[in-house]
Length: 193
Image 1: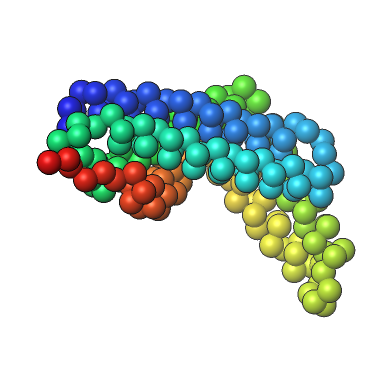
Image 2: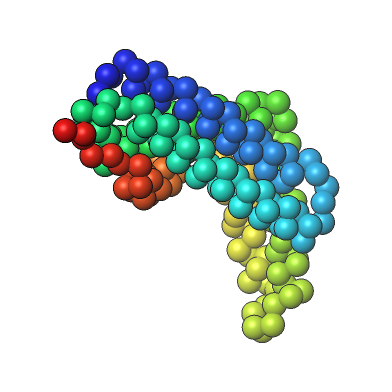
């Protein structure tokens, strides 16, 4: 395996996947913060968007890994471990770019606007849940739960760039590694003799 070409390919794939998933994350945050949609409509749009972005992520990750597998030297092949390393490394870079995109979004919108919009969503979700609840749980228990969450949001400090990057990296490392176990199995190639 030529390390220079391998890491160049990882950087290219990670940057492209990060750009696509970063735009997806910005769209999700925009819908949550600025759309003014009703809660049910917003839930439907976000669910559809998450499914579409997951399918795109899996498809692109598989496509990039398959391309890398096919470009490997026939004498060397492309073992499972190479595929897993490729997917893991690409996922790390994707997480870095998504974390930067989230940081950029919060910087443009403003942290206070972001937190206030989240608080409004929690209030509307709690009131909707209290209306729909058929279990007999009192609305006061929902209010206390939401109040605790709101206090936590209001008392938390603005996340740093590194907080956003590490949070996104953690998500993509876990998801990418789990997908990598499957993708690496399907793209592996035995060496030709």
